[in-house]
Length: 456
Image (cartoon, rainbow, N blue to C red):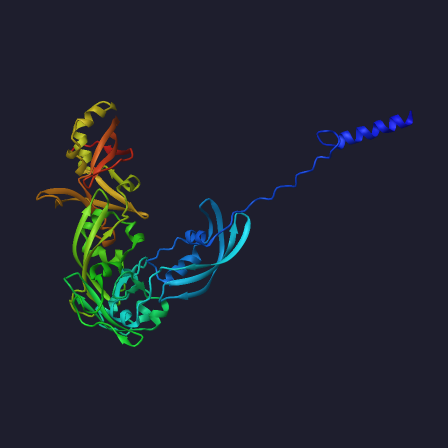
C-alpha cells in the first residue's frame, strides 16, 4: 500500500512540473533585450544637414553648436559631442568624431563631410573678393563711421576692426561657390585706402583695398575697382541720437510741438562734444500723440557744415487722459455774471435742461482754467492763435506765466458736455466732463464747477 501511494505522489509531481503532456518540462523563454537600430555615417550627415554653400570653418562652427535629440529616418539620435579630426579648406572637406546615443545605446564614430565651398587660391582671395555688412550686426549703431566721415581719420579701420562688421567672400574663376573669409584669413589680410565716396546727399559707399597674404587686391572705383560697403549717412547719424523717454513722458505733446525749437534739445540724447543739432522741421500726429522732428546735424566746431539730415519720432508724451486728474475749471467774475443774469432770480432746483440749451462756447472761455503740475496749479488764459490745420484762428488755453517749464500745456478749443445742473440759493452747480481738446476726443471724467450767481 505504501508503494502505491509513493508512486502516485511521484506521478503528480511530474504532472505539475511537466509540459503539455504532463511529463516533459517546458523550457522558459529568456527575457527579450531591447533592439537598438544601428547609426550610420549617412544618418549623421542628415542629422547636421549642413548647407554646402558654407565654407569648412562655417560648417564646423554650425555643427559644433547643433547638438541634441533629433529623429532621422525613424531613429532617435542624440549627439552629445563632436570633435574636429581634420579639415581641408581647399577641398571643402572635414572629418568629425561624433559621440552620443541612438535610442538608449551609446555610439561613437568618425564621419567625413564634403562638398563645401572650396577655398580659392591666394590670388583669387585677393582679387575676387566682395564685401558686405555682417548679418545680425547693427553696423549703423556700432560702426564708427563718424571718425571716417567727420574727422577724416582712417587709422582705426584695420582688418581686425573691419572683421567685426564685414564679411568678405571670394571665389575661384568658375564662380560656382563663394568662400567666406575665416578668422585665419582675416589674420592674413591688411586694409588700406579706406574712404567714403558720396553717391548723393544722403548715401554713399565705404571703399577700401585689401592685401591678402602679400597679394594686393583691386584699387580704384567702378565695377572692377575696390569693393565697397553701402551706407546711408543720414540713417547712421540718426542712430547716434535717442529720445529721452523719461523727459518726454512728463510733457503734453501739443505744447511741445508749438514750442519745439525750445524743447527739442532737452528731449534728445546725443554726444554734445561732437554734434550741434539744429531744428529743421516738424510734423505732429494728434492721434498717435507723437512728433516727427527733423534735424540738420552740424559738427560741434562752430561751422555750419551739414553732416546729415534726418527725422526722429518723439513718442511717449503724456496722454490727454491725464487731464482727468490735472485739469479743472472754476467760476470767476465773468462766468458768474453770465449765469447770474439767467438764474439769479429763478427758484432753486434742477436746471439741467436750461443749462444744456446754452451753447458751451458762450461761457467756457469765461471760466477760470488750470492744470495741476507737481504741487502747483498752473493758471491758463485763453488766446486767439492760428490753427495748425488751416488759415483761421482758434482759442487756445496757455499758461498765464509763460514759464518755459509749463509751455507744454496747450489746450486748443476744449469742449465739454454738461451732465447736470442744479441751483441752490445763489449758486449754480454744473456737472460736466471734457469730451474733446486739441482736435482729439477725450473720455473725460465727471467733474463739478460751482458758479456764484451774481448780477453785473
